[in-house]
Amino acid sequence: MTTTLAARGAATPGPATDLAIDARGLVKRFGDNTAVDGVDLQVPTGSVYGVLGPNGAGKTTTVSMLATLLRPDAGSATVFGYDVVDDAVAVRSLIGVTGQYASVDEDLSARQNLVLFGRLLGKSRSASKARADELLADFALEEAADRPLKDFSGGMRRRLDLAASLIDTPPLLFLDEPTTGLDPRTRAQMWETIRKLVAHGSTVLLTTQYLDEADQLADRIAVIDRGRVIADGTADELKQSVGTSTLTLTPVDRADASTVAELAESVLGEPAVLSAEAGRVTAPLHRQDLVPDLLIALRERDITVDEIAVSKPSLDEVFLTITGRD
Image (cartoon, rainbow, N blue to C red; front, side, top):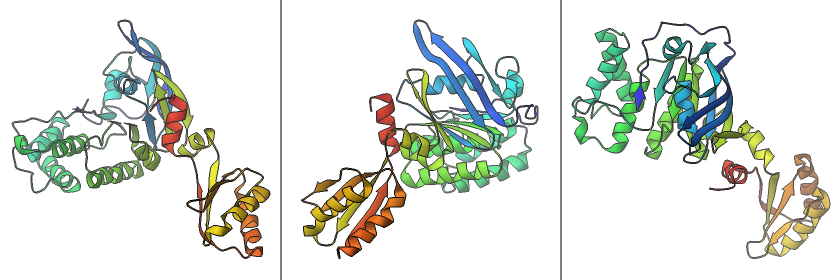
């Protein structure tokens, strides 16, 4: 669903301009089910804020409350200083929302859909056409611009929906799993579009189940599970919270692997694991400044290393560790 909530210009960011979003204790219940159970989010202006979580974690419900589409049952939230309940009209003039499903008009072509969105936002016909042409090019839809949507594939419809959300460039854009169903090339194009939006001053709140997407784009990440924020921080901070980096060494001569393991344990002060078949040694790395010392020790033993790598825990490991499930 692409939702254009109001024409731009009706409001300007309020006094809390250092935070695009400030949510405290948001709660939303549907009957006996508590979908969101006390969520806190502080999103700095001019950043990409990622929200990760399994299906049913409460991500979309949280976005719907922040975008004034659902009324919170408890807690409070402001967007650029405007309360999402008391100042809903002002909030709507400052945001754009792209949901998980397309809401384009089946009876119109891609170009006609984009021009329509532009006109609804108060743009002139000529400005709407010009912006439509730009977006059709950005999302590789030029050749299909005047074809009926019934001939579009699912991925093409998704690209059109994303393009429609960018007819205007709102100060705050909610992207709810925006790249679901996109091929790798279009997904990379969307990533670049998000980076450009932020470079020009917009703030993006991105919900996703693609951990590499959050790693690539988000300045800060919140992990939501069962309606609660269970972790918050930069990608590096979250990775560090579940484990240390790992050093991997592969000697040219596999016969040297046991000696490499002994030296690694001696220099790093950590138990090393030897994979005899691969001739590879791995060890926890708490202090990266010790790596040069280890290399010197290997040189003194006349051991040549074919490969050396330092790896941090992945966001996949963070997700599995924090949520306790995949």
